[in-house]
View 1: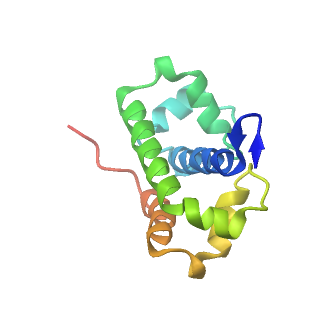
View 2: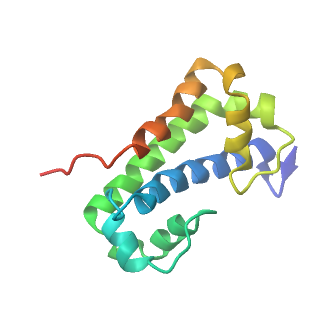
Length: 141
């Protein structure tokens, strides 16, 4: 099925990738004292932005020219992981979530509801952001 030249699955997976990015960026913002590679940038540029719904990610995108190198690098890493998750979960999303309306994390939620049925590769990628949220990465010297 096509919507304005974009397949529903492709659109769904783009939303999935954005959700994964938001999870990673928001994780940095939600930790105590805003730790993580974007913590200082979130505090500086997005302090009045309520986390959730991709708002922090949008705020950082709006301020991307002013972001610190560490934050830019962190965002690129999350984009890479989101792309990998997209590739790993594309078939699972089509199988289990094809009737789920994209947006507001619904695809990610659907995939998590089918955790036991997901391919091993998708399950591993879905678990990866949880590991990333346990703490900030070590600072690069």
